[in-house]
Image (cartoon, rainbow, N blue to C red; front, side, top):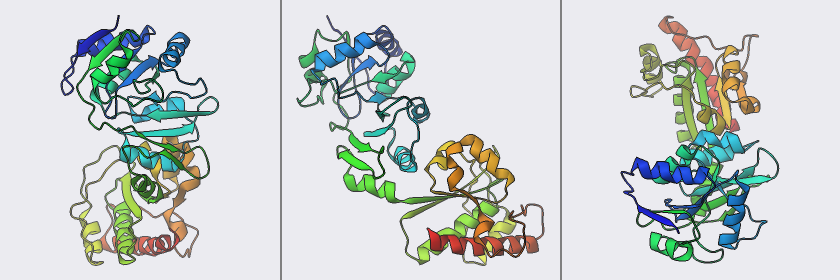
Length: 351
């Protein structure tokens, strides 16, 4: 018989989470809530569990199940050659109702999703195994929004079932195939087609310096101003630093030289660069060559999108580094701004 438990969706009982995770590890099937519809969770590595899942759902064997993950970083365990467009979608819509079809770490392709449901993610994390979770219905029938509908179809066919009330969205996830040259929206579910396309088509430019308090701040501010003048709203501009410490304001000389350009950066707060930022950037611009290796250590796949900013300026010498002005006089900051402004002008023409 199916063991049925009721859980508080906002404050889930840890004992229930642990029990459900244990059932999955042992090869059992568990009805769990997600924000879209109820699903049947199973251990992807357990052949008998997967065979049983196919049988219960009456699903064709050539139609694979989607992997559900607890954390964005888990994508590396299942996928390879992940395109920039995927990371843009992940940044915007995960956790959430978006399934991505990507190249599998092994062979073929894999569907993957990070649900926006605390209970689902806690169970996946606690289980410590790869979890698939198709909708809790017979294939071809309407996916269940309410627990009672899921149990009605599957009572006695699964081992454990968690009642968390009505699913928050009640609409299946959208599906995007990113394994081909041109992305394909296979199902426009909870996320609209135009919203998906808008995120994928938006270019991302990332400026990186040491502390994100002067050079990258100048570059970000200047490019944003230039794009605004051109009425370009299809580009996102970011800046970050390689130092682990964030939360700093722009240096006073940076504020001063930019104010002469009609730009106010008094609200700027520095941030440390992350793997996610690098992965979703179409263009990564650094100030010094020594910064390159640090970035490629975080995300080796960014190599072909990584350039020295000064490469875009009119070079009058062989020095492609833009030196750090911290600790220098205002005149040095003015010279630094001049070089960055020239390079940013060219960047704005190319993107």
